[in-house]
Length: 198
Length: 78
Image (cartoon, rainbow over all chains, first blue to last red; front, top):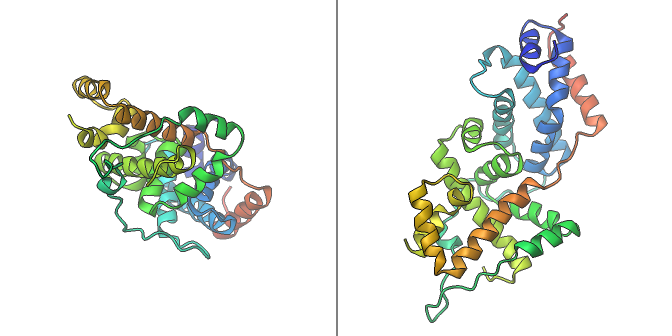
């Protein structure tokens, strides 16, 4: 009995070996997500432990209406949103990212803004190892409610529907936050790669 | 469709979530608007780059601590 559904069923019946396998299967995913959200090993460890404790305690409530990993992300996302990071001043969580502020503006004469296509430069910078740190820093500057959506959707690769389930928002709200978060990160990359003015 | 209206829908556009009709309107606008073309390309690149960020595997000690934490906090089972 090694497929996930069997492991979940056995874990619900109190089989500790099955439960251990279930934890091992998902521990890298949850840890990676927690590290991305808090950028601190001790905080990530707290979230990891809280997530798996929550998983075990509420496993009987898991009805397989979503993927198991999505359900687990939901527990981890709640833990992340509750957590205040050690030694870090988070951007105000209620801060709204306004599309009007993020949209490139016409110049003083009303001409359309110059937008560079830096896609190829980004690829080269990524291969040289220069870009990951900048991207992580840009993602880290997002208000938490936006960051969590971008991390789940674009970094972890969940669908909009799965992200909505994980963070308890409507799909429309996820898409709205994702767009603002992406535009924000894009702007930060543009300043580095394309010399675009904010 | 103007630049502002297009700007609002760009993530859905690059994610392939818009209707054929809206996609057609966007392409029509982009035909004559280089800034919007480049913005869309770099927005898509941003999303693609996120997916390629390296993930940190769990350190062995953190995994061991998790195991110890769970056995301490959970009732003994079979």
